[in-house]
Length: 118
Image (cartoon, rainbow, N blue to C red; front, side, top):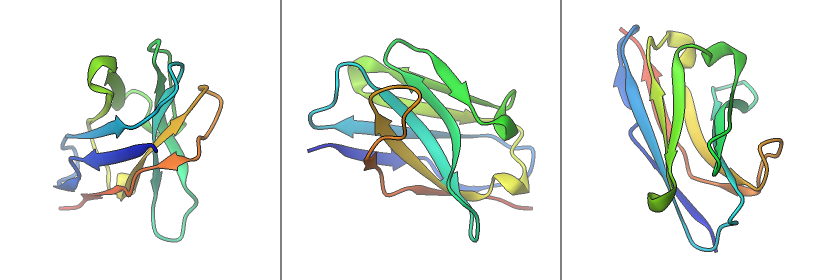
């Protein structure tokens, strides 16, 4: 059974930074992609960033140049460094596990709230 646990959310002012973490446990694929998605109230869940175990990554258009995804395979953990945060980045951020970069996997964490407000 796969478990994904996110941490690091919180309240930050516009222009500030925050780092999220997601740790995976259980039986995961040797080839895998871990990613971040977010969902704001009244909006659909959208891709933020994802990264494969071989360190290939992709980003949603709205965060390119501001967010950086990374991972530590030994720790089964991915990170999301978020810089220059904007009020529109306010959402619940979810960790996802898939097999390939093109996929959205069936495994989700419970999410961590990020609120950008002055």
